Image (cartoon, rainbow, N blue to C red):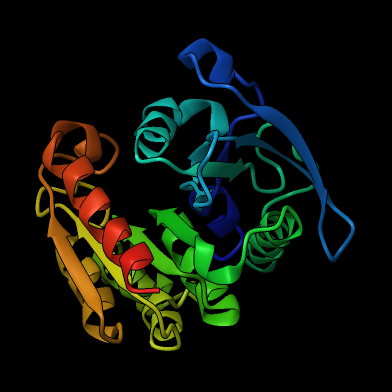
Length: 251
């Protein structure tokens, strides 16, 4: 179990099955080099006339080409969006690791700031495993807002739920201590979770919310882990709009 943890945690797909052009969205290919000299790939989707930016950190499976529905939502909300593939995913080099994914997220953040976006112009969004990465990044850089969707409070908490006996017998290789990270975030936080989530228990999302500082907002959606955000439309998108409007109105 100790040696199998990377294959249990990360499910990268190399092949890009689509591009934003297939979803009628303009985009630029982006190549970034991380602090540990790994080249990662992403897409920057501009929104003409908008000064708002969103950094999208996806979950542990697939790659950026599987996120078309989400990219369309954030485009409709008026964001310039940067989405990256972590190391080992899509066209990015390397192999995934906890520290490596955090380095990838930091390189993406620096790309947005180098394009001229101030910290409080940027919202960081993380779904599932990406929520933990987003929370740690936000604790370090303090963005304008943080959205954590369908994520967990820590790797230990999740292991205790999924493998209640084995988790006490195996040393965990990863922390992904989302609840601890979010305690250090000073800006607005939105937590999104479904009671019907079939991968990450709802109460772990509640635990993340409880750890967050004010101002914080909780949105209860419906549906399963992978498609709840689609199954909960239009409430889902309306909730995102209400939160991000507050982020920019409060500056």
